[in-house]
Length: 53
Ligand SMILES: [Zn+2]
Image (cartoon, rainbow, N blue to C red; front, side):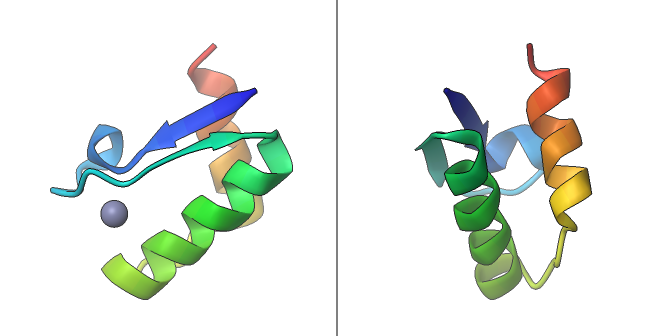
């Protein structure tokens, strides 16, 4: 299980995604691109998840 929270990355936003790593990467990436205009690479998102452990 993995979890990413928008406000942990400097966004004033309460979006949270939790689940399988692949799902979290896809949903968080889609959210940050659509809502915040930032297109994180899958590698960058993977690093966010790995650093949280
Ligand atoms: Zn957000």
